[in-house]
Length: 556
Image 1 (tube, rainbow, N blue to C red):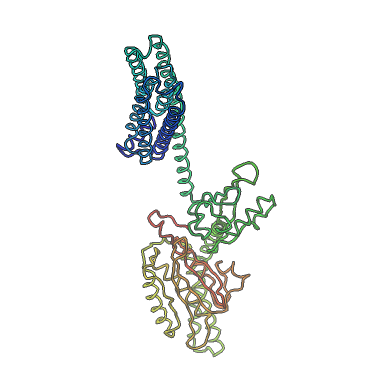
Image 2 (image 1 turned 135 degrees about the vertical axis):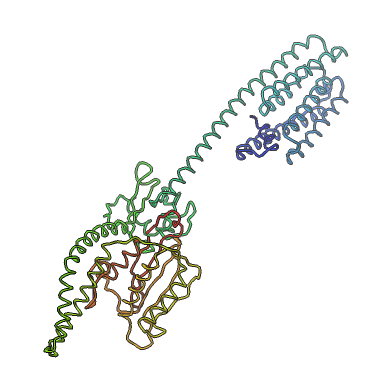
């Protein structure tokens, strides 16, 4: 397919490969412009020779008037073509054939007016036909060569009949026609090679684009977080999972890695320098509190070129390990709880009977109260452990978070008979929707609020609990935060608060936060702790990703 055909096809219907067709059309139009500039230059030179060289006259030897008119017509046609070529009208084929006809007629008239083929003006026709052969299919190019040869023979025959030339000039005319055919054939062979190369390059380009799109599709849909940077630490590719982990917006290609994550950029520079960085030292916290462990894989030999960075959320691995340990502990605790339950019931019953004895004094009643209180505490621990061991499946429902929190706060205040201002609700978007088992959510939030009230300020009218809702950016995951202004948790104790049986208060079971986190994880949510600026604690429930509700996948 030639450049001319590409443009005509583009005019007839939408081209399947517009970029390639446009490039071929631009090339063809540029060739026609160059040919027209050649035409104007030759016309101007011949006109100058016509006026400057009169004896012996080279141009218009036999008919100066006819030669002058032919040159003026050639220059006029060239100027008209220049105007039309700038506007690319009419169609490409029409332009090619009009230029050929103009050159053929003008050259034939000039040869006739200048004494025949011996004037040497036939070379202009060789350039014209050869150039147009670069743009036309083989059969059309050969047709132009044949028409040129026939017109030259016709002119020679007419000139001989008029006595301008002799029969001896038929041989040069035949040679000129043969040269035109040879040049056309050579140009056509060159054009065929050019078309094949262009088609191959176009196919390779399509394959490369398909490969790039496939590669990007695979990377974007991997659950692993991947960032690809070049030798200058500019981002070339990043998938959605990495964007969420790093807490960035939507970085475009070429963005500096340091803008996306200064911590990750610093780790990459250390790795490029060849420093032996400890695995724990390479890890860094993400904006949402998770611990990210980067792994670097060079794309080329050495560390100075492009690098693929794999981001591993080690907090998830640590949670899985912890869950395995806690599951084993839970099974053991459940077995122990079954064994404790019957003796505990007997002890509690015996204590009640002893307290009803009329011979019991005040001191003995105090002892039976201690038995009753601690028996109730142990019973609560046993019930909690048995509930965990059953691991009942969650039944998540879609809940409008703000109305649910308002109803819960009202119920919590009324049940515990708190002051109306004890629970503060921060304003939030009314259209936040979460997916969670409402029973589990109620149990988690109640436990967190109950802890907040226990550690709240004793001042009258003080706010005991602060509830706030929102959406994390850029992940889009909704959250509910329960905060207080109590004494907070010591930094060295933060890692222990979600472990079973850990408590900082006398009389507590140490299972409240552990059970709350277990329930959250059964619903694809996460329960996290963070200290509050100015004192106090904040527990945040990060709900399942709304984008993955339909697929049943949750990103914790």
